[in-house]
Length: 506
Image 1 (cartoon, rainbow, N blue to C red):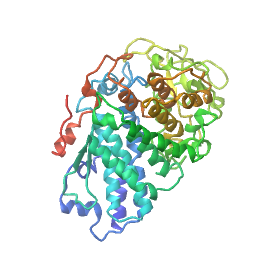
Image 2: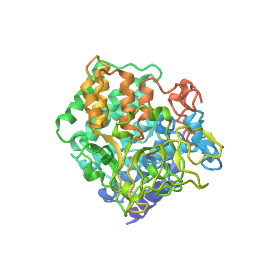
Image 3: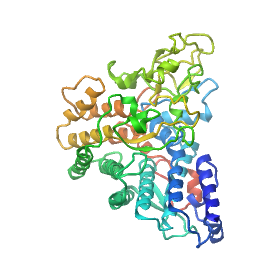
Image 4: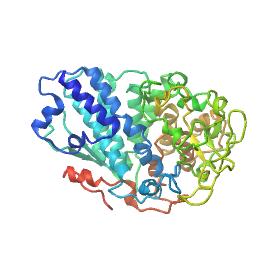
């Protein structure tokens, strides 16, 4: 069938990051071109195949180190991507994220905006073919999630109506209007979403995303001075209680099981993940170890990203989230999971060396631009996803989007913002992770706890903005201006779609 050939081209484009879909995503095309893309009015594609295409379209933006993760983590106090001599310069794209000096021509931010638009495009296109209620609900959830990311980062969400044509320029929803649409979509599709499994769009994922919508409602109305309405916070609490009282989730005994190669079997707290099929079909989740590890680690890494010592110091030594030996990893390579600081060893306890023959001992000190002889070892490295040694590049670790502990911490935050008691919730997580129980908890402490629990999961920028900390100073970053609360609309997107307008300050 003609459409299946076209669908393959769409999937190849999404996975390879090519420009095949640049026109449909960003601007209008002619009716003749639409015929080429969609096979004409008689096309009758299989909804299952179309839905698979929508899921695949999420892989590049959410699983590549240069897309959503870079936008939401490199801009925070959790991650730094230092230039190491001649390595990792990339025309400064990593440095300007950390120092909040990006502009509207930043290649990674522009690619991320485009690729999120492709998810919206693929989902809406699927709905044109009147799929059954279940697959339609899943596609609409994936579209809502991409729209939420676009809103959170850029405040402008391009879309086309299902009954529209590709000759129409995408329309734009902004701010609270975009949020209201996302929330209405999530509410409407809830009854038709499946109960699971966790790697499919499901009811609890929609409830957890609705919680984030209510929690950030005041942020998207005024990012510099958000307010938190008591009724919105009560919605967060009520939705959390529905998930908690379902009895489906408990905190894992081993924190890192949530991110392991077989996390679909081991995790008791993952609510929604991106399915990766070991040895067969996978996104880029492997960057979670390759981008951090040294060349002489096993596996041999890319010697790039680090965390900052001030963030590392938020953890107690006994907190298992800080790091530990992990079966199937440490006994194979000597590598621990979590934060890697100090001397590194192989599986036989032999001290590893760097390429100069010096001890491979990761230091607390790290600069945004490294030029000294120790540039291979500066910075504490992070391996939150235990390495999959058995499946080559197509690793089996499912990427984690939403977890039960996040639901608990969102409820705790809503309680604190309405003068409620959140201590027991926070301590239930801390004691499970081996940390000391707190005697009291305030919003600053809760932000730290969210950092300890959810580090590297793509929520830090969202959290820092909501708690009023995103514009402050941290290691290798000076204070930044309020325009940095929103990313610029990419110049190439502005050129393609005049319905977009540049965000203030750019």
